[in-house]
Length: 189
Image 1 (cartoon, one colour):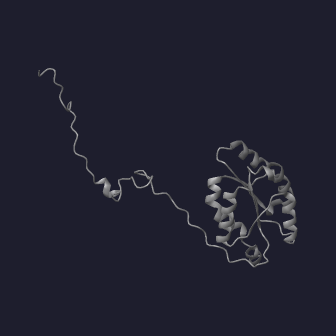
Image 2 (tube, helix red, strand yellow):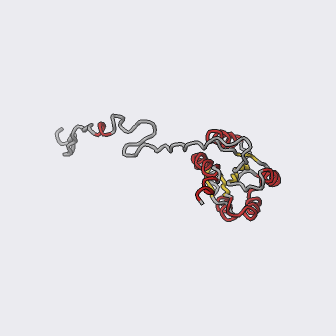
């Protein structure tokens, strides 16, 4: 009988666990939310300060070819919070008419939903890039899995192509940067 019995620990001693590491994790044992032990808490980017409210007759500096209702609402709401006027257009002609009504002031930023087939972004972006030159930035956004479309958009002249999530995350900073009047640069010259 003694020969058939296996020793319980096979010579390995296991000590009781020291739980002092919990004190280092503030008692949450690393399980709060989706945070894992040893990983820093996610960094929440602070929203930038809104710009001063624009004059009622201020020209739009930002135009968007966006028909997706979710992003249309997101851009409108963020623009409202940042005191930045964003105009939504559907066609090249509509954009040209709006620019003319602005007194030929070139837009600072044009946003394209690269999946907006009605706007034909792959044919329109090169035209706009050649017309508007360096004074206007063109930013496109798309699904993160559309690598080929991202490559094409860069090749045809998009200054920046972002996945939808990154576009949403950086929208306040983008609108603030491009929505500010050029008065600051004229005053420093």
